[in-house]
Length: 488
Ligand code: SF4
Image 1 (cartoon, rainbow, N blue to C red):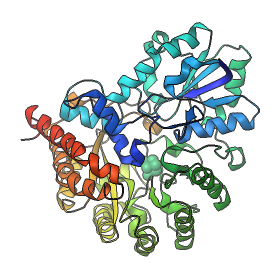
Image 2 (image 1 turned 90 degrees about the horizontal axis):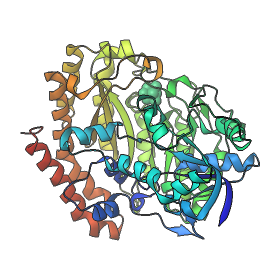
Image 3 (image 1 turned 60 degrees about the horizontal axis):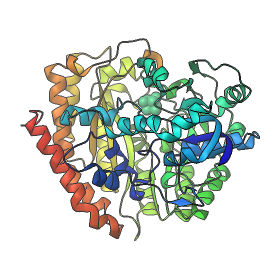
Image 4 (image 1 turned 30 degrees about the horizontal axis):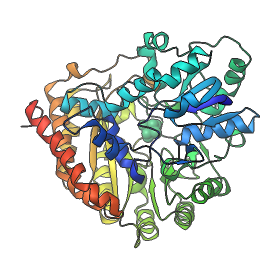
């Protein structure tokens, strides 16, 4: 049996590369449905291939903390959740994204299908109920959870006792090193550790092994300062090209062929303000395309697209070729109301004025459609300052976006960032306007999903073979939505 000081893992829905299609990862937030579980698992979160007994790819957050601990002289290893029983460890570090299914896509699926907890919550619990985890706990291992989903434990602290979770670390992973050292030295861990400090560029390590779907960070932080967002509490840092290139090489050398550039707004790479720099973005994407056959961006903003449309044209020329016809990004529309922009997201529209925001969104949507950028967008409703008029404005914007090739996901306000002391918005509080907004989003998505799916599966033969099953899943959502009265 192998001994490791810190064993790092995550549940099965996260330890997957989703057939090399990051977007399929959203399927993990669906609840069990008419597709048998074995088939659903294969379609949306197949087991990751192993090399020398270890996961070939692992979530980027795990790779980062693994590298940091090793750099600091701490013995750490990322392992498959099914392999925990093969090890002895002093600490189990578990990475979480949406442990209880309260994230945006989970709540959307729950709103339509109404059939219980999503797979990602089910598999998180399965990990904690597994023989391997229980064995490690019986041997005295301490459990620390970290990752973007840690906020959820604040609302379910009894869960910590139930599954022997000793500490919830909320902050950038690099800042957990001292806490981990304390745990290794037998010190008592706090139940919750909120870390507001942030590592400098030098303190952020380079990953040593491949990340899921070649995702690599190009920077951290965001200059827009939306009140409901926790990212905004951290400083803005952009990585130099060399640092980014090193991580691309790590992935490519491991055999990963595609990659995702990750930042809160890829278009602002290298900038202090909110106006994209063409030269920097072009250089970054050219470099990415040199290493990866297929690339996409994690996030970008409508305002940045509208501020420099030429950059999107150039990126389209760089990215789209015989290997890929389009690229994707997650983008927050959030609202169609200039009033709400002023109150809750004062820099969202910059360099434009809040009054121009709905027009900016429409203009950017046109630019993206013309240049093969297909985004997955979010809307937020239930903000404490939101009025009925704000929701009406968002509904009007949705009407104007009906020809925009995109997915638009509504999400409920969750108390985070500067609004962390406000009340959580609950589904049962929805008024008629908010319900109408949700239905509009669903109709939009059902209209576009098959078109997008057709393009999405073009590049890989195996995925073409699986395509009918994904289409069947969309039909199931539609059918459930009608049966439960969400859609007419
Ligand atoms: S633009 Fe996005 S990442 Fe930036 S502060 Fe607003 S919600 Fe957060």
